[in-house]
Image (cartoon, rainbow, N blue to C red; front, side):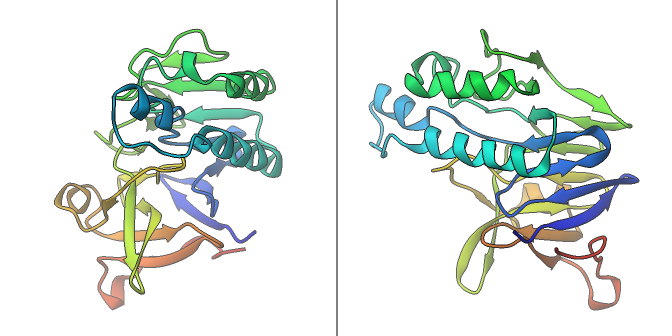
Length: 225
């Protein structure tokens, strides 16, 4: 599995091709926008019907990333559930989630879809700060790590989910299955990350310059591996 190491705010991070991010110094795996229970929430509210397997697929990928990274902490940057009722409606998948959480120290950051998830293993916080870096759902005063926007980048005619890494912000892609996305060139994302790198997810983590002149292009730390 090819991954990409990079530095941000004097810390080393590892972007995984799945869309998760490992912070070795904090022994933490960080994910954003799981949106667990999306298909159930859409059916409950009369929206489009989606195959009801996205929660199982997302949790299986998450368990694999936790095992591969060896991280003992899991930090979810908000919108972990598609709404506040979704957790209670997970059915058999709720047991798998609880088992996964029981094996790790989990921090649930509040999102705009799930401002007050309750009854979950771990601790719920509006945001936290580690090593001078804020971890929150929506980017604000940097340096921070956040999600919310589900950034995507168009490469070779395809839209790929991507990490956006700038001087003040790292914006993670949505980790959950069946999540949409916002183009990295959208004004709100250009304002947050006017220059930097994008790390594409997929079969391998691939770094591409983001809005950089040729002479000023940033490089990841050690490249992909």
